[in-house]
Image (tube, rainbow, N blue to C red):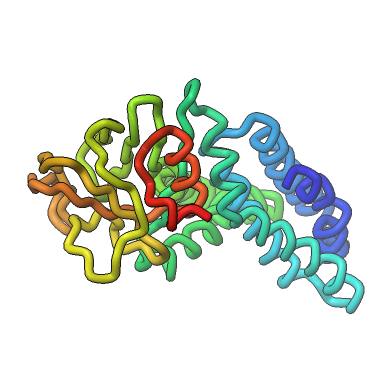
Length: 283
């Protein structure tokens, strides 16, 4: 991922630069400063992994792809810029990349596994927010550089506020984890649980892929993909978030469902930490 991102100025950057040739000097300089600043910020994020780095990387990767589609004219620009942007986007969206970055701030012997976002969020709002965020940041300065003073000031104020809101929303998707800790497994998901919950290793009967006919308490928040089921030795009280109204409602449950982005890796790691995982689920 680091190598791919370092090549962006020489691939996607050349495509964008050719599109800026006919613009005024002030617009060219402003666009160059914004693009280089965004690129450099992501470089720092990749050198110092953390959840916020994942937001910046995926927003930047999507922005690079959109800019390539918008600016490419010649066949060589489509080939070079398109392939580079596609590779950056695909690798940035890989579950392994997400896991690497969110574990940059993990503590000691814990291991964080990202949870899949809810399907209704992925299909529209999440992608739209990632696409609109760079536009919010860049529109105001570019309008000011083009001497559109009134529109530029308005766009700067409105865009800054909207960028803050969108950035927080995207960041909230990167701090939803299943965390393996020395004592057992923690579920940290503000969309499904009022507070993070620790399930001690001694209280976990099994951890396995959820059967199709399970009646376990659904904490997946509507995410797609393979759900895992924690089966406890006895019932516990779960403070589950209400899907519509604010607040939580208590449930008594001994089987719980959640959806990590890398279920197989989580099961293998859990088995190595002496959490009981049926041997047939981990090749």
